[in-house]
Amino acid sequence: MSLERLERMLNREQFEKVKAIDNPELHRFLADWIEWLEPEKVFVCTDSEEDEQHVRWKALYYGEEKMLETPNHTVHYDSYHDQARDKANTAILTPGGRKLPFLNTKDRDEGLREIKELMKGIMHGKELFICFFVLGPRNSIFTIPAVQLTDSAYVAHSEFILYRKGYEEFRRLGRAARFFRFVHSEGELDERKTSKNLDKRRIYIDLEDETVYSVNTQYGGNTIGLKKPAFRLTIKRAVEEGWLSEHMFLMRVNGPHGRKTYFTGAYPSMCGKTSTAMMPWENIVGDDLTFILQVDGRARGANVEKGVFGIIQGVNQEDDPIIWKVLHSPVEIIFSNVLVKDGKPYWNGMGIEIPSDGENHSGEWWRGKKDEEGNEIPPSHKNARFTVSLEHFPNVDMEALESPCGVEIGGMIFGGRDADTWPPVREAFGWEHGVITMGASLESETTAATLGKEGVRAFNAMAILDFMSVHLGDYIRNYLDFGRKLKRAPKIFAVNYFLRENGQWLNHKLDKGVWLKWMELRVHNDVDAIETPIGYIPRYRDLVKLFKDVLGKDYTRGDYEKQFTIRVPELLEKLDRVERIYRETVREVPERLFEVLDEERKRLLEARERYGDYISPFALGEKL
Ligand code: SPV
Ligand code: MN
Image 1 (cartoon, protein in one colour):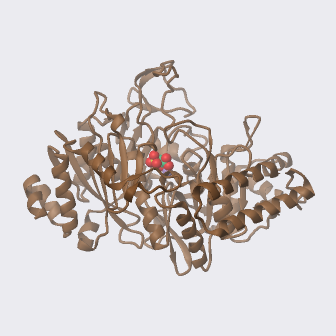
Image 2 (cartoon, helix red, strand yellow):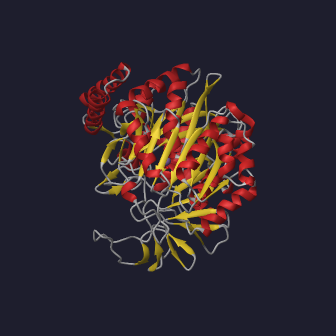
Image 3 (cartoon, helix red, strand yellow):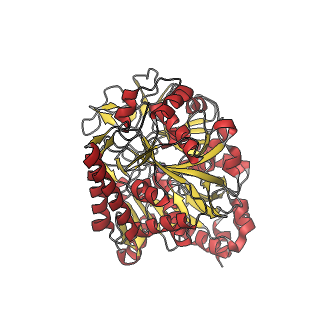
């Protein structure tokens, strides 16, 4: 039945491609949506280079991307008001609109009705791309197949860069495929080829059918189905099935004598996640999303993706030599929302002179140009990005990237943007302590990665709150259970790159390279540490050596003392804030969470009795 409908709607060549997949459920889904969206034509992407090339060309042909001077480089613009994830118009569809803490939910029936209405006939005159990808390495314990429908060749193009092709995987799995579905339309476009009807922008996540709908937007975080839309679906599956789907990078830190130790790291957007994973002397596996499964009592991780949709602001030759080099080589890259002048891309904080006019996310741009609210428009948007495959990075760990069993995780890091509370690095006493006082207690100042005010301290458990799709209490319970099942749990660490004093940063951008090396040593118990009320911190002498070895820098006692002072009043206030959130807003959480927070509070109060409000690491047993 569905096949007959598809045969009517597709040309012979495209029809043969979908027919070759033995999956009636897929056929029904495609037939229903093609009928509904009413595209002028349909293109089905197999895994062939030719089909990928078709998509690349269509992005140029339809004007969603423009060529830059360097071969294989293109630029894409999103509407001036479509530069980040739209949290307000993103909703999880739940039966009866059941409320869940921190989540934007909407009644499922109503949401489906609304989104279908918005999408009826929306692809008139347009080409619909049907693409098949997988999350995780192909044919692995991590693999989840997914099909994307989109009328944006830019979105499809981005996905070819970011995900492993999945057409053959669909053919191999046939009826057994439990696949995700993504339906996207950029809607009507203006003369700049950017989405016009932003008032009708919606991103609705249907957990029941494992389908995400996205409409009247182009910004990647709203539209690239396998990225953040899929993330909501995988979090739900992970909690149901007892594994972890995390907003984490995955990287290799190189220890002494060729030792390889893998770390994951969860940080809210724009808090140093990509730049940590890109430390030039370490090796990247992934920069955004990691699946973690338990195999033989060990936590094993894999990158969900195979490319980077990274923030370009501040990328400069000195601090990010690898990204810089990749961005200046003729490999396939989509730049988005940057300034372009004479075919060259420019961005804020690139460390070289930027032209005083050109084209950017606001259209024709000149220095001093103001937006409707009278704010000066910078050369590039703060959330401007680059999209590139990881294979082009000289420091990628390809073996780990493609390993069907992932890699064993030695340490897990949680980090936020915090001006005054957490020290630059510390280690948890154990899994529970780390999950609760570091992951589940994460707070971070808001950034330009989402629409809305910046610089506001906000609770952001596991840096995942923007993407949460289940009750936070269930998510934390699953986390705690996951650790209990492990014979050897990864060590948990917390970092903070953003400590400030009188508006000045206390750390340099590259100091994180030292924290990573210290954490690597701690995973193998190669150095000891100072026990504090909030976990273990590094000894001064170990950091002196690491600063010298890693950065060639002298690390002063004064810097160490300032950075690693235990700030008891701020830490107690934070504990109170976090506890209040769990008691009053989240409510149903494992009791253990409150016990662990209480234990931490007791330790802090006792320490204050003895040492006062601000405790120097030297007072806690650090000797020269
Ligand atoms: C993030 O904001 O966390 C990103 C980019 O990784 S987005 O795709 O917008 O989510
Ligand atoms: Mn992210």
